[in-house]
Length: 89
Image 1 (tube, rainbow, N blue to C red):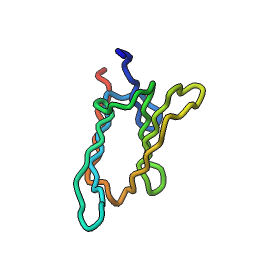
Image 2 (image 1 turned 90 degrees about the vertical axis):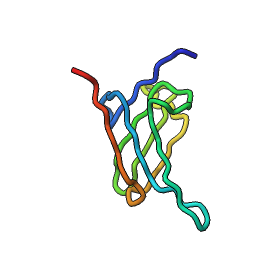
Image 3 (image 1 turned 90 degrees about the horizontal axis):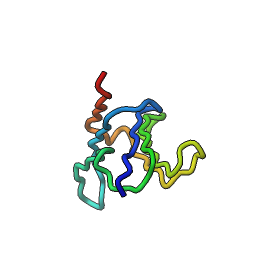
Image 4 (image 1 turned 30 degrees about the horizontal axis):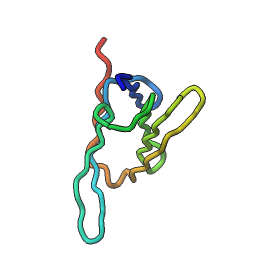
């Protein structure tokens, strides 16, 4: 499938969003990275938002119809770094 995903940050199209965060698993913690441009999920749009105490990543099958494939919530206190790469003017 050669379809290019649309990546958005708070509803505005951007080139990429990268979130580095700590993942807690049992007695250990690892540093994980979500990179919207490299994410393998089959979807039309990825929208990343900071809402209340979470970074919310929503994967849309069809954004206009609000058809959501899945949603990921990352607590903001686990976020080490967030980078938004804007579109080139």
